[in-house]
Length: 170
Image (cartoon, rainbow, N blue to C red; front, top):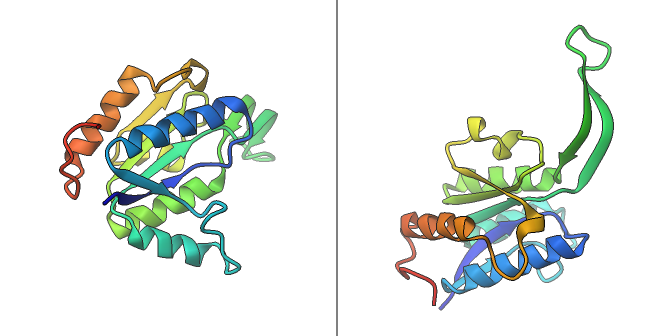
């Protein structure tokens, strides 16, 4: 019987993101894992935090996927202060991956964190703020299968995932 794992990611808005998520979910399923999230199938009329909490409580692990949602061509941090910093081309994901990662962390779930390379390193996506390895990837390099180095990271995560003794993918 498949093991439920929570997968947190922004709603994909382009073919590269859709393809990547399809390949990732297929690879996870090859380990007899069932990636679930709020999405369309588990949507609820309740405030989103309660159904997310209910889903996470059913899961044995969580995969956090940081993919681009926002692209700021120019912006400022600490505007109108002595610490003002201008940035150009800043890519960020949705705040929901941070919230869902925090909820999974509080439950003590093993986390696998995958981050699109150009995203800003902040919160759970910053390896300096996390006890978990953050794997950077270039989504444009994902064509017909997950990159070999990403597969190895997932394989290693699976070996450390105590609740699952499946060994290697089917």
